[in-house]
Image (cartoon, rainbow, N blue to C red; front, side):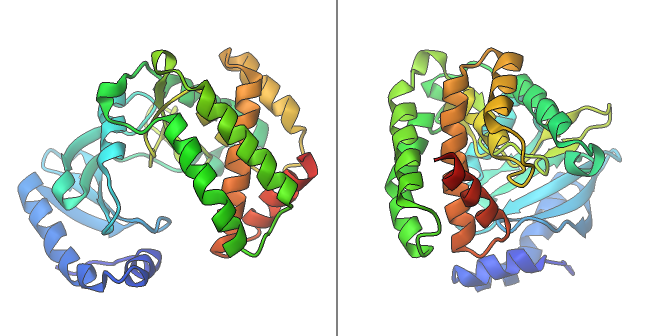
Length: 294
């Protein structure tokens, strides 16, 4: 079968030395289409770690087929979607983890294209996060917020050096301090299912006009972890991030200090990573804000 593979996916796979997978991919899609009775439609651009194509199921239901690139474990994402069961996240319809394949509810346009006011988007993102959160225990086999904080603490100094030290040493030290604080604050008894990367392009409009999240990282963490990504959003907005944090805290009842610290973590890690891969001006905007706040 003929298959349009987006350039960003192709570049990722080739850079990782997995070019042969590109030749195998049409056969994988064809076999999934036969097994799951799917009609394959157009490929969707935007991502780089998965092929995403529109499909139609045998009963006419529109859906999306997502196949992760080699090295991309879709297991945590499938776990989140399974636990959420369509509430706050796209509904998971089928899965084949061996082929890194997920069949998902097809959603509409991103929140970014529908809601013009950033402050309103932040409130809507907050509301959809609350719909997703639910108690989840160690048996879920998801990584914890404490593990994420420890992983970031190990990774950030090295990434900062590789990126050419794009922010001040004080900013890195501040982020490392916040990581240690959130690592120590982790409590298995109060963890919830969190998305891990909430922003306006990861929230798509559902048929009823509400929004659902896509591409969850999948964590068992404190709710502030998700709200911190909303604090990171729109680094060029110029608003008072302390005030934004307080609004999110008031709307959810989550501790403002925890939200602020996760916001610092996400801002610095995302900014340094964006600089390391040349994703600009996003990286520079994040780190300029981080340096100013530090």
